[in-house]
Image: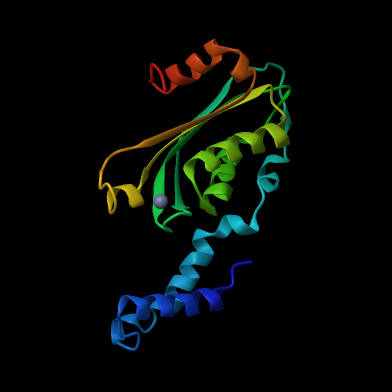
Length: 188
Ligand code: ZN
């Protein structure tokens, strides 16, 4: 559970640390405002992917299901700065599918925690494998990291691409290729 009092206290200290006057007009409400904001940004701390993936529907044919361009916003755990972009998910059912919005929900659950992009990608793939139990899943995440663009190496527009493959996607290169072709890509 997100402790808003602690966050409020910490932001007050952060402002003092910067050398700010925490009593001035513009900053008076800032610690409380940020505490409320973090509750929203870290909403994934209070959710599990099973909340969304446990409701399955049976299907006759096991054709690839692909949901692309799932927009997400997350926070990097190294700098507490946003990273954001798109996730693409494909899976080969094994008799069952989930509602399409549930794939986006699964991304939201994990994006709503402090993250690194590599782990976010793997967690989405593993949650789908564990809950839906398809024949295989492939997840690609492309994101821009504010900690790369606003500070440090300052490379605006640069994107980090991460991929996770599980099950039948690991064994069959042609399935990976089909997924990439659906995204309009020739390779990773
Ligand atoms: Zn970072």
